Length: 91
Image (cartoon, rainbow, N blue to C red; front, side):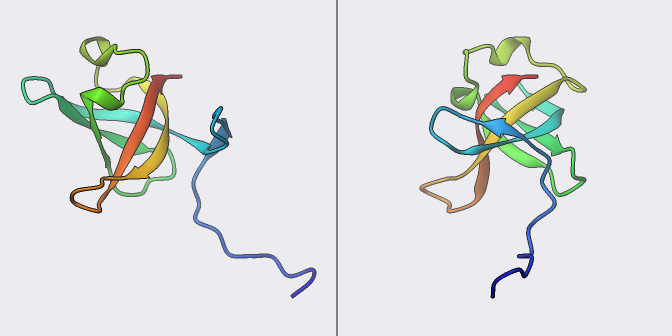
């Protein structure tokens, strides 16, 4: 339908990656350092998003702290088919 506005999820987009994916923003909710993963609380107030230490863009997983602002891409885990954050980087 021309002129009709499409429904979208309320995700705070902050830019595009080199791969053309939109970046979302959020805050580190918690880090489980000994297991190598954590969770991001999206700025849109949705459910926390899982991320693995290997998805931190510059390898700085050990420097991330709860409350820190980050940007990330939404992806899907190939094994579990669950959503996950990818290309996580500090904002």
